[in-house]
Amino acid sequence: MDMKMDRKTSEEAGSRKSVRRQRMELRLEGAKKFWKRFCKNKGAVTGLAVFAIIVLVALFAPLIAPYSPYDNTFALKEAPSMAHLFGTDELGRDVLSRTIYGARVSLIVGVAASLLSTVIGVVIGCIAGYSNRFTSSALLKVTESFQMLPMFFVGILLSAIFGPSLALIVMVIGFMGWPSCARVVRGEFLTLREQEFVTAARSIGCKKFSIMFQEIMPSVIPQIIVNASMRMATAIMMEATLNFFGCGDPVMVSWGKLLNDSRNFVRSIPWASIAPGLAVLITVLSINLLGDGLNDALNPKLRER
Image (cartoon, rainbow, N blue to C red):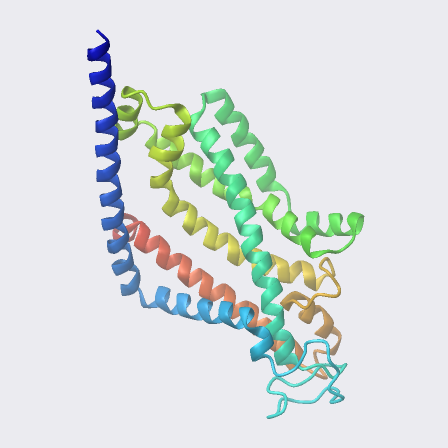
């Protein structure tokens, strides 16, 4: 009897390893096909290249920026020239240098806020998509309630209560941005949990969390990646908006802070606001192009429709 049980257990373990090996091979093949489809999309490749350049500029800002973002060059309100390619602001600070350093804060907020909202959205979406009807409906109501809250006014209110800070902006954007990810994950889980491979996993005794995160989650990751890229673009725009209205750290240099500093001098020194404005526009556009390319490459059937 014991020998039969041991043989059965070893056969089940062997079948699981075989299934996982086949699945890994399929994922590697899928990754190669994804990269080929992605490279065929010129807009996506352009978006990736532009965004990569922006990230590199932010990382190597001390080496690239010609001046410190805080130094007064004693050239007040100077128009763009060879010495100051984007001119100087009302305090004689080099606009190009401040725009380069501002990329650091804006990208940090975009990445941190999108990661926070993605993690929260994935957890809630998984639970809502794989739980019973009551739990799923309750979490859906919570998601819809959060989605109705105006992020901008919540940020203004919390800034007035706790004071302006970079952490506050990240928390507001992150905690207010998870509903879209949760809805996407929930919808995918509701569809996939009835598929044959999930039924097969249940039949061989896989536990609930193993099915959720090892069987279903890999099929949902493409949608999560696309949603996270879109959330990053939204987070960068919201950071610029909240900083423009004084909700961010007054000491740190960000694109929104530069727009806030230059709003009273739009007519006299327009270049001070044009540079950070273009930086936000180009960054968001590149992320959107990248997100569209990821969506097309990860969901080829949707593209064919």
